[in-house]
Amino acid sequence: MSVSVHILKAGAAALALASLFNISGCNSHAAAPDAPRYALVAHPQSADAMHAEVYSGDVHARYESQLGFRVAGKIKSRLVDVGANVKAGQALAELDPLDLNLQVASAQATLSSAQANRDLAQAERDRYRALLDKNFISKTQFDTNENTLKAAKAQVAQAQAALAVARNQSEYTTLRADHAGVITQITAEAGQVVGSGQAIAMLARDGDVEVEIAVPENRVAAYRTGTPAVLEAWADAGTRLSGHIREIAPEADRTTRTFRVRVSLDSDQSAPKLGQTVRVYFADAVAAAQTLIPLSALYERTGQAAVWVVDKHTHQVHLSPVDVASYREQGVVVTAGVEPQQWIVTAGVHKLREGDPVTPVDSINRPVAL
Image 1: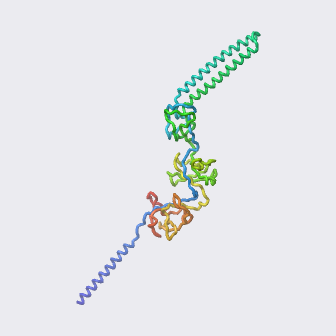
Image 2: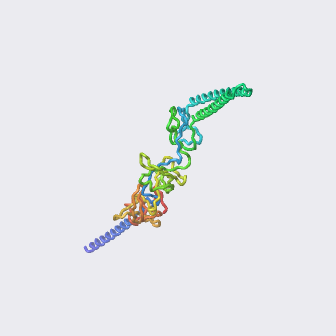
Image 3: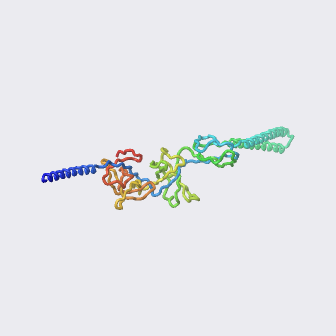
């Protein structure tokens, strides 16, 4: 009996020791570190060119012309469409020339009649001159014929001018582009009767483009011609272009009570297309030390705003408190706690802990070399 008890105790001890090793092995497996999670990272953006107010406008050519016929008539044909690139002198539309051709014929007939009267008056004057030399007529009679000749010559000059006007008007039946550019609007169609000077097409000239914005009357006094600005196309967010105010309207629009302000680009490179929507920011010295970060990058701990900064060497995240200045449509403006050259986590910030290792990726899941 004693030997059996000793065997049972030895077996129990062996089982306990085996269980201890098994538990130790399980604990060792549980303590293995997890693989670094993927983290979306980005650089904070400098907010040195952002003003407390952002204006939205659209792109225009610096020079825009409303084109119309110089004579009235019925449109015979329209030769271009909206969006067409045209050259200087290119035909855009034509009027029915029948009435104007008749006016040319009438002016030509009037000129022929005036020339015939002039020739007759010239012959009469020459005949009376010969009679005067022989003292067959008085000087008064000769002066009358001299004046008749002068009147006939004046009628010829008048008829010639009328013919020139009629011929010019017949040439005005073709509407031509006065500069190279793009047709941005068509306001008449074939078959329509239009008046002299009525707008038929809008031509945006090739060359400089600028953004037109509307500034409220209580803010327009803060800006001057030449004030620097930063422009960002809505369709190409993140690409910023420099510019300056070129023109400020002298009076407010009667309907909107805002002032029209034109902002020119400093360079034609990467200029937005006509009609695109553009945000305009004005330089502000107060914002020189401010930084813009995405709203999704903001993390709060014990009431303090912070961001997760990724260490370039260890790829570990560390919480950095920041001072929030304002919230914008584009993100959060902070004044301290993060630098533009640092990498911050911009998504999933509430799943991180201090010292967690991460695998940084960009917005399209490409690895980022810190």
